[in-house]
Amino acid sequence: EVQLVESGGGLVQAGGSLRLSCAASGFTFDHYAIGWFRQAPGKEREGVSYISSSDGITYYADSVKGRFTMWRDNAKNTVYLQMSSLKSDDTAVYYCAAVKGTATAQHLMYDYWGQGTQVTVSS
Image (cartoon, rainbow, N blue to C red):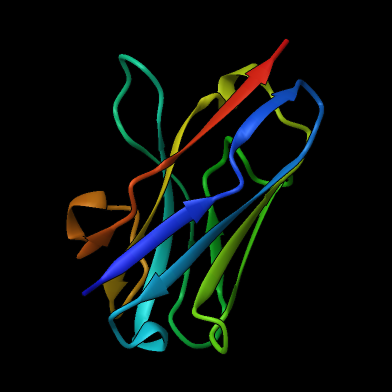
Protein backbone atom coordinates (compact mmCIF):
# COMPACT_ATOMS: atom_id res chain seq x y z
CA GLU A 1 0.00 0.00 0.00
CA VAL A 2 1.34 3.39 -0.99
CA GLN A 3 1.51 5.89 1.84
CA LEU A 4 2.77 9.42 2.29
CA VAL A 5 2.44 10.64 5.85
CA GLU A 6 3.12 14.27 6.72
CA SER A 7 3.95 15.41 10.22
CA GLY A 8 5.34 18.44 12.02
CA GLY A 9 2.58 20.95 11.46
CA GLY A 10 1.22 23.12 14.23
CA LEU A 11 0.66 26.60 15.53
CA VAL A 12 3.58 29.02 15.46
CA GLN A 13 4.00 32.76 15.85
CA ALA A 14 5.00 34.90 12.91
CA GLY A 15 8.75 34.82 12.50
CA GLY A 16 9.00 31.34 13.92
CA SER A 17 10.01 28.04 12.35
CA LEU A 18 8.61 24.59 11.76
CA ARG A 19 9.99 21.46 10.14
CA LEU A 20 7.63 19.25 8.21
CA SER A 21 8.39 15.63 7.43
CA CYS A 22 6.91 13.34 4.80
CA ALA A 23 7.47 9.62 5.29
CA ALA A 24 6.89 7.45 2.24
CA SER A 25 6.24 3.73 1.86
CA GLY A 26 4.89 1.29 -0.69
CA PHE A 27 6.80 2.53 -3.73
CA THR A 28 10.39 2.93 -4.94
CA PHE A 29 11.06 6.23 -3.25
CA ASP A 30 14.25 7.22 -5.06
CA HIS A 31 12.51 6.89 -8.43
CA TYR A 32 10.08 9.65 -7.53
CA ALA A 33 10.38 13.40 -7.33
CA ILE A 34 8.58 14.90 -4.35
CA GLY A 35 6.65 18.11 -4.07
CA TRP A 36 5.30 20.11 -1.18
CA PHE A 37 2.02 21.88 -1.86
CA ARG A 38 -0.25 23.95 0.33
CA GLN A 39 -3.85 25.00 0.29
CA ALA A 40 -5.41 27.75 2.35
CA PRO A 41 -9.19 28.03 2.84
CA GLY A 42 -10.85 29.43 -0.26
CA LYS A 43 -7.63 29.33 -2.28
CA GLU A 44 -6.26 27.03 -4.93
CA ARG A 45 -3.58 24.47 -4.18
CA GLU A 46 -0.18 26.11 -4.51
CA GLY A 47 3.18 24.54 -5.18
CA VAL A 48 5.76 25.36 -2.54
CA SER A 49 8.86 23.31 -3.23
CA TYR A 50 9.99 20.32 -5.26
CA ILE A 51 12.97 17.98 -5.20
CA SER A 52 14.28 15.69 -7.88
CA SER A 53 14.33 11.93 -7.41
CA SER A 54 18.00 11.14 -7.00
CA ASP A 55 20.30 14.16 -7.21
CA GLY A 56 18.49 16.37 -4.72
CA ILE A 57 18.00 19.38 -6.96
CA THR A 58 15.38 21.64 -5.41
CA TYR A 59 13.01 24.28 -6.70
CA TYR A 60 11.10 26.85 -4.68
CA ALA A 61 8.15 29.10 -5.26
CA ASP A 62 9.08 32.77 -5.18
CA SER A 63 6.87 33.24 -2.13
CA VAL A 64 9.04 30.94 0.00
CA LYS A 65 12.47 31.29 -1.60
CA GLY A 66 15.08 32.09 1.02
CA ARG A 67 12.81 31.05 3.88
CA PHE A 68 12.05 27.38 3.16
CA THR A 69 14.52 24.56 2.59
CA MET A 70 13.64 21.14 1.28
CA TRP A 71 15.75 18.00 1.29
CA ARG A 72 15.34 14.27 1.15
CA ASP A 73 16.89 11.27 2.82
CA ASN A 74 16.45 8.36 0.42
CA ALA A 75 17.81 5.92 3.01
CA LYS A 76 14.88 6.83 5.27
CA ASN A 77 12.30 7.35 2.51
CA THR A 78 11.63 10.76 3.99
CA VAL A 79 11.45 14.31 2.72
CA TYR A 80 11.72 17.39 4.91
CA LEU A 81 10.64 20.99 4.63
CA GLN A 82 12.28 23.45 7.00
CA MET A 83 10.18 26.59 7.19
CA SER A 84 11.65 29.72 8.75
CA SER A 85 10.59 33.35 9.08
CA LEU A 86 7.02 32.19 8.84
CA LYS A 87 4.32 34.67 7.90
CA SER A 88 0.56 34.60 8.33
CA ASP A 89 0.30 34.05 4.56
CA ASP A 90 1.99 30.67 5.07
CA THR A 91 -1.04 29.40 6.96
CA ALA A 92 -2.43 26.42 5.06
CA VAL A 93 -2.70 22.66 4.95
CA TYR A 94 0.60 21.35 3.63
CA TYR A 95 0.70 18.23 1.49
CA CYS A 96 3.55 16.17 0.14
CA ALA A 97 3.13 14.35 -3.14
CA ALA A 98 5.17 11.99 -5.31
CA VAL A 99 5.58 11.91 -9.08
CA LYS A 100 7.60 9.37 -11.03
CA GLY A 101 10.43 11.01 -12.89
CA THR A 102 10.84 14.75 -13.14
CA ALA A 103 9.79 17.22 -10.47
CA THR A 104 7.02 19.53 -11.61
CA ALA A 105 4.89 22.35 -10.29
CA GLN A 106 1.81 20.80 -11.95
CA HIS A 107 0.00 19.20 -9.03
CA LEU A 108 -2.26 17.21 -11.37
CA MET A 109 0.81 15.27 -12.53
CA TYR A 110 1.49 13.81 -9.11
CA ASP A 111 0.70 10.15 -8.52
CA TYR A 112 0.49 9.92 -4.76
CA TRP A 113 -0.58 12.34 -2.03
CA GLY A 114 -0.44 12.50 1.73
CA GLN A 115 -3.34 13.51 3.93
CA GLY A 116 -1.89 16.90 4.80
CA THR A 117 -0.73 18.65 7.94
CA GLN A 118 -2.06 21.98 9.19
CA VAL A 119 0.32 24.90 9.61
CA THR A 120 -1.09 27.97 11.33
CA VAL A 121 0.98 31.13 11.72
CA SER A 122 -0.36 33.66 14.17
CA SER A 123 0.47 37.32 13.71
